Length: 129
Length: 167
Figure 1 (spheres, rainbow over the protein chains, first blue to last red):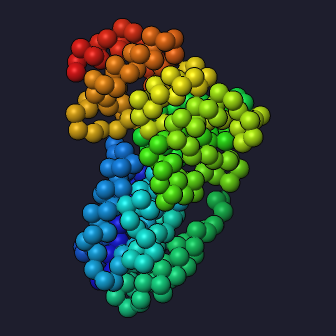
Figure 2 (figure 1 turned 45 degrees about the horizontal axis):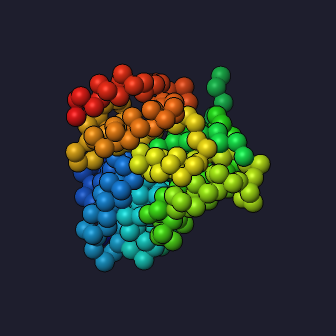
Figure 3 (figure 1 turned 30 degrees about the vertical axis):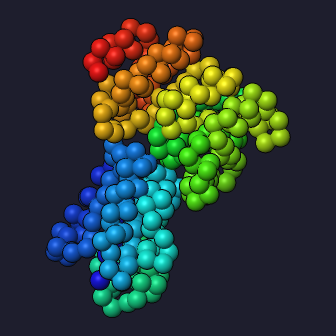
């Protein structure tokens, strides 16, 4: 089963995962990891541990940005493209898409679906009155 | 060359540096001085990818970085340079090799075995404090501040002595 790690600054990842589980119920294989209080090496080691636990389906790392300590730690922790896809700009719609389609789509297709849903969610909902 | 910030930060190139300090200080060039990173092509590539496109980046071993800072030509000439090292001892090495560094910023110095948190986000061991005292004794101003506008703590000799007594 494709697993995912939500690797973010502060409590963003924890809270996103909590909200996903509030909406969909418990989700195995959806884990949050904060960079709070960790050096680059320590955070990379956390990612490496997570990568080591993946099965042949691989995984997806969701990042809240794509040019910071989380992205560096993901790459230095061994989250290479053969087993893991890195996605920046995580939002709730992306995580809901991950959970909804991860058992029906191959990882490449799933990633595209997640990106599409994430982009759709970034929208001007309406002007204030 | 204008050295706009010399920072000790064990996360090296990351958001607090490129976005936080970058927005405030407008560096043209980030110089990452690290023997370990410079010796590893993958680490060099990963950290270089973290730099916004409007900034240049150089990843150099300590000795080459000190030389580049001493005699800035080519890549660093006429640049606003933001210098990063991952450990206090690397900053000491740069200074001892003649790099023209005055004030030193302490950013992320995270927990590791044997280190104690003596300031928010600044974990040190006895070796770190001795190295900081050596820098202060040489006349370098030491300021612990993670981001612009954030809490500032000047590491004066009295504070460093107090830190040492706690270790």
